[in-house]
Amino acid sequence: MRQQFVAGNWKMNGSLAGNAALLAEVMAGAAQARCEVAVCVPFPYLAQAQQLLQGSKIAFGAQDCSVHLSGAHTGEVAVGMLQEFGCRYVIVGHSERRADHHESDEQVAEKAQRVIEAGMTPIVCVGETLEERESGQTDAVVLRQLRAVTQRLGEQTSRIVLAYEPVWAIGTGRTATPEQAQAVHAVLRDHLKTLGEAAGGVQILYGGSVKPDNAQVLFAQKDIDGGLIGGASLKAADFLAIIAATR
Ligand code: PEP
Image 1 (tube, rainbow, N blue to C red):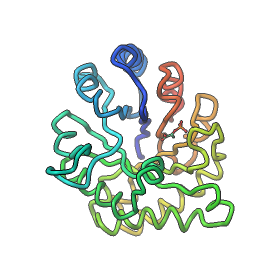
Image 2: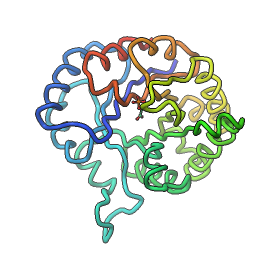
Image 3: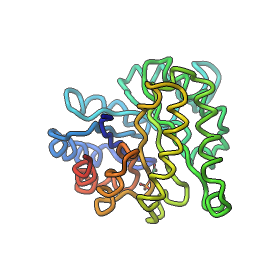
């Protein structure tokens, strides 16, 4: 049985004082959580997360990384640096990065590889736009995005966490129905299974306007192994209620 996992994606939010208060509440409330829990914070707050979360059940990670290992790449952050700060996870291929920074499927796959090589776990995001869904391309789009990763990683695919995040559901308050989400998760799972038993057991998270009132029914779906949570991860009460909704 796959363990469920709830990861917060703080995006470009936070402040030293606000983070300290949020993490204290999350640590207290999630101490007995039955699922895995992590928060992916902006780069400048990694040191704070490392310090405050030490010895707790809450893991932490980053929201992106460079494909380069070091050198003349102004503004980029290398996986070695993230690893040095104790990150366990790195989100790669979030739709906001694919859209705002024109990241290709191949670049996302390369980032996933760098993260694994540095001993961390990539949370690989895939998802279709509304236009792609409405024109019947959902499965083709998410499989194209996933195949770029699986072709590069081969049997190392078992070391990723996958997140299905329909672009039209992110930050919009519009959630995929449990049936819509489960259908895509099943397609992703089928592809992973073709790579062997270990890859078939990869955790697949759902992301896109998960809130306390819809989390339980989403997490009850057969192939949904938890959530990647944006807005609701910024409020301790909401994040804890979502954690409590795992099975
Ligand atoms: C996300 O940014 O990964 C996300 C799922 O955001 P939200 O929960 O706010 O839709």
